[in-house]
Length: 123
Image (cartoon, rainbow, N blue to C red):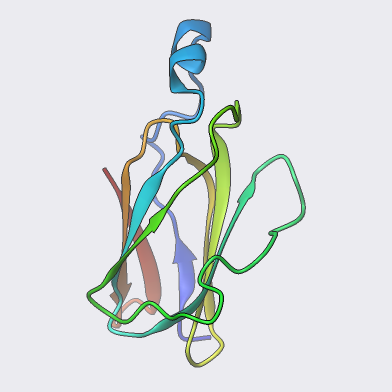
């Protein structure tokens, strides 16, 4: 496949203390930025604790290269670790597992043609 997952985010904090968890409730909203050079046709975000991806958040829309998509969560969720999957217009897909959305506000996807990998950069 043209895109393999590269989620080299070992420095990403994966656990919050009790006080941080209480403050972070409902703070999983983030912006996804497509800098891959390819159109994204589907976006899925599911809790890492579940094997299910849920529904495609784009629905009938697409996310062209260079554009952003705001992902909003209903308040009250205590989950911080989420898995993200994108499906490109050619059917290839990339996944970012165990993203701590309680501490991430923006995720930018980059395509590294030489390495054949998608890179997820968080802010």
